Image (tube, rainbow, N blue to C red; front, side, top):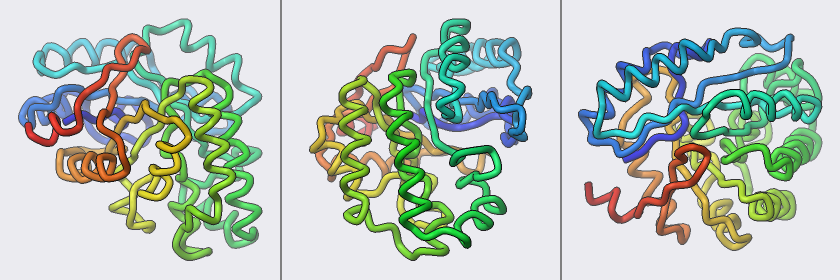
Length: 275
């Protein structure tokens, strides 16, 4: 198995050390794990200033020694804001990241946060689906078109709390927007992530779901990775990753990727499922 999106205690909302994740990965014979620590650049963000690159580098070095059969990558998750593209590029030049994930968490400003429950509820209860989801996909398109990232994180995370207000997420309703995003990914060489956390959350399906994965495939997406988005050890493990790999296969993908020195490394989905 592989896991290319999870958070340790080097992220403000993480609750376990990378060393403990590495021990679990070794036990489950993972080929690669990449902790993607939050690096938030907006001074109004609760996590602003928390990221410590020295601690991150040291933790990865220790984890590599603990799990020598597993590739342990140096990964980062940026919250995309167009005004901060220059800062994101500077960080990616400064540190030897293996994987840079770009995710949309904020709409317009830090006060409009669609992946944190309290702020999301306050936003969704005042907006129509067209306003809320529409704005999310506008910013997601900017993220994909920026070319700054290796992977687009959880590409329909807007539904995490949106489903509580608008009902089940219907990918076909947002087909034009989704296909625009995936075409931009294909143009910039940006991969997408299948984030399996949604199976444990209100949507009851991953980010993105099956129909959206099919659209991505049709629009030329070949670079796809998978992550648990675990923030503690109880959410980390092969069960949902395996389910996600089976879904990717059903949607027409035969390979999944992890990133090493910002370069994609392919793995056979069938091969992983047989391990």
